[in-house]
Length: 407
View 1 (cartoon, one colour):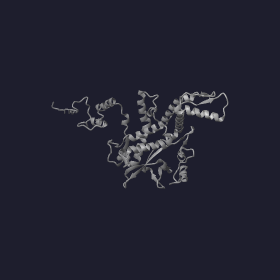
View 2 (cartoon, rainbow, N blue to C red):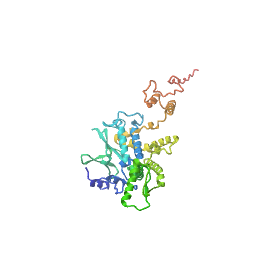
View 3 (cartoon, rainbow, N blue to C red):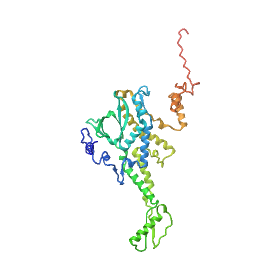
View 4 (cartoon, rainbow, N blue to C red):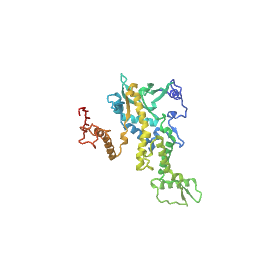
């Protein structure tokens, strides 16, 4: 295991191949010191950030969407799936004997959202073909670059020591700038954590603002303590709301709710929107529906696919192709995520769309049945328009008559 001195040396540009240097205030250095201090007084880490429901919902939404969408390997000319290629199983079946491809994509996307990068090692056979993908803990990886910007990955081993892998053997998925959204939005997340703690403390005091007791005459310290303790024991917690009896002229003066407390709900809603902006998610997708309507929620779902999810899918497609396909294979093959499941609408609209596709001869009946998870039917592979033909078949076009010079 590398020492803290070696880690700091690599971090600040002292390594043999490391070219990029950081300062102690750089976001990349916070992983060594346990968290990101926010002005709200809360330390924001990946663990504490997930205590905010909006952050947990955003991370889960993006990572689960990337994991659940199917990825396919296609031929560029015929667009036929290449199921015999060893990469097809790694992107559509199992990443390794104990991890499905969906689980690996979800886990690596989650790593990238929380730390900035997700890593998996490519295990190859003697011929260099990819066999398995194994997730690597992001905390055990440091990225090093040479003078030309080519990356390599130094991985700290559990048994001690480290190893260096080339970029062709590491599946690397990262954010746009390699920095987690939690780092960029640490102030918004810290404020949400502080607000949650404030609300919990407020309700632990029976949801009532503080107050004070007064007497017409000066009390001794012991007398004041006894009166206060008796009041707290009989009129807070489960005893809250019961009638109070005071002697010796003691009066209770409640403190009025301030404007800040009155606007507390609005402030909390705004923090949800701020976190949604950091993850580039429409607020309605993380269940902030104050401004959601039946008409704009569907548009927000389309916006989520276009503005948020599609860049992640593009990164996954490029990362897969970079390590699972050779340079020659990338000219003939491509990897693509199928997003039609996210565009599925209600059954009536879906039936209308399929009907139009068949009518314009863009899909066959069996392709429609495959989209509905139904088995193919006999004679369903022809591109025919059922609205203009009878019997489900197309009559052959008559041959043009040959010119007869004798007629």
